[in-house]
Length: 410
Ligand code: HEM
Image (cartoon, rainbow, N blue to C red; front, top):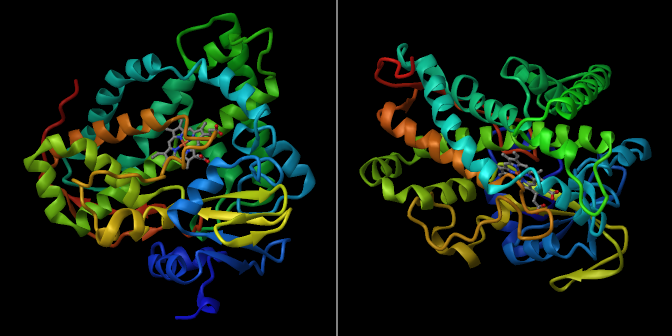
């Protein structure tokens, strides 16, 4: 293999799964690589693949900005960039700090705990939907539903509207995968509908507040500061996307990893005390969000490599999480007992560290507990199909079979 054979900018190279052999080569031979980008506005980008360098870029917001060019791989035109910069993911401190303090008010550990019971019932109802037939598309019928129901509850969206919100956010984000290709017109239409919906929801919460996040956020105030309606709309969109795609693909990707490593499934069936370390290993091994992007604010360096002001920098969580210098010779193995497990699936500890990490962990825990209890002999019954994307490590379809059983919820 040669460096010129590696193209991480083309999503088609991820359609058979993450090209981990490329990342291993880059970590070894060229950990901060100047990568040409034939489709981008910029000539190229720095591709950062070692754990230590990814963590440094993630934490060093003064030299690597989330706001300057936003955090997505694609270069934005000025109009789109300006609206993306109103989303917290694409802000730098001190603006980000103010925003995060306000939204954290509605994201308390108590709120997550209170959701716990609902998550167990929702998971049982989802499994009830397939348990009598003995087969399912694991993605469509099992892993997609739970994050969707949880995020609707968290935000205060009635369950009857959850698919509407999900469809709008999917359309807005679009996808390079031909199965989900959407036109620019339908994206614009979807964004208008979603913002109108968020406006109405906030108005309802102002008049009749409950315990949910948007009731809290419409009232949230710190030192006389509060969120504008546009900021609320954008947070609504961010949550609809960030809370869904990530958790769904973690659950699907982890199930596929267990099918490839049946000894690890048996190990977990025999010893449930391994669940906490198994969850961290699922996060490391799958890494649903494969990269984020930053822009250099001044001439600087990553390791020994000089970087110029304005350069595009892409750091790969998916590569950091297989770095042999951190995870040893078994970095490529799925080992549910792995400790320590210093993965960066939720970010490398910088200011944007995933706000939903504990909620996601709780959803994953409940889902796998109930699967182990209710469909212990679950097995793969057809081919796994991956999403065509270099951003989200996604599974589109995963046919499964198991011994049929009776539903458990009334
Ligand atoms: C397995 C599931 C999940 C994964 C792998 C994941 C991953 C990530 C990553 C990598 C980031 C960026 C961190 C950084 O740049 O330092 C992030 C940010 C974020 N995540 Fe998650 N996430 C997950 C679930 C969730 C859920 C369930 C929610 C909400 C309910 C959520 C809400 C957010 C928000 C709001 C941010 C932006 C935080 C900020 O900009 O300060 N995530 N997530």
